[in-house]
Length: 307
Image (cartoon, rainbow, N blue to C red; front, side, top):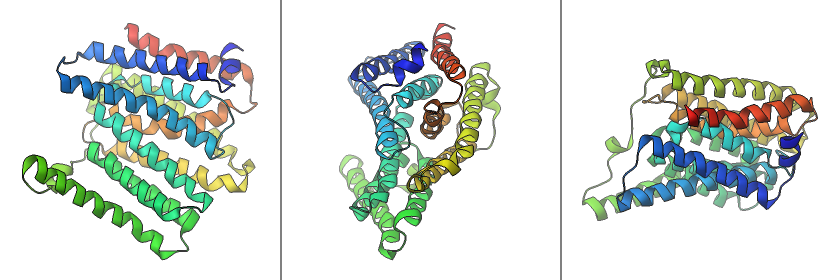
């Protein structure tokens, strides 16, 4: 049980190796698509990689801090594998940064259960969702998750329901100030909003439907296990589990209405799937199957990189 034993521990070497794994496939994705040597392009590339690695750490924090998993590194391992199966997203800085912002928002939403600094956390979450929506407009749907978090944890205070609107207003004012400073015109909603589409012709490409099929398969498998074990969870963690499932449903909705369907939009599904998958890998259910699954998951991105 090589991989199950290695990732059952939480040591610095685990994070270093997974970080190198992420950087490797990030580099391969950009090498295959080509990248510009201009300074702005290089800075964007560095920012994108930094956000990608930071998201890995954010996912690990959400899992451990909110008792959604044990002190293992299965979470970051799953995050590395599932995201590297989506090379289109790895070369889309806006998607990577938007996903990073959503993870930070989820972190603040679930932490509402502590009942401390409630209003600050709600405002932070709303601002992060707005940041994500600037990068990828339909990320704005995660406001549904924020309001669900308020309902589950702090809905008794009506003021808490108004704070997200303050975050939206603050974001609009800031966006207008930046727009006036840089382009000398007011912030335009027309340039901010995007269309939606329910056509899936793009998935007919073999490289796309394989990634789509794999992620959907893992999603269904982990979700079924998550739902089956829900009743055995501690009462204090059940609201967080509901939020994880809700975040997956929102991500699926984003996939359904995304204007451009090239598997990049599937990136938003990876975080909730990782959290659910971590729960499965940390269970005592059939270690041999888990070990085989880990090897398959680890090798799959290499197959993509070669071909």
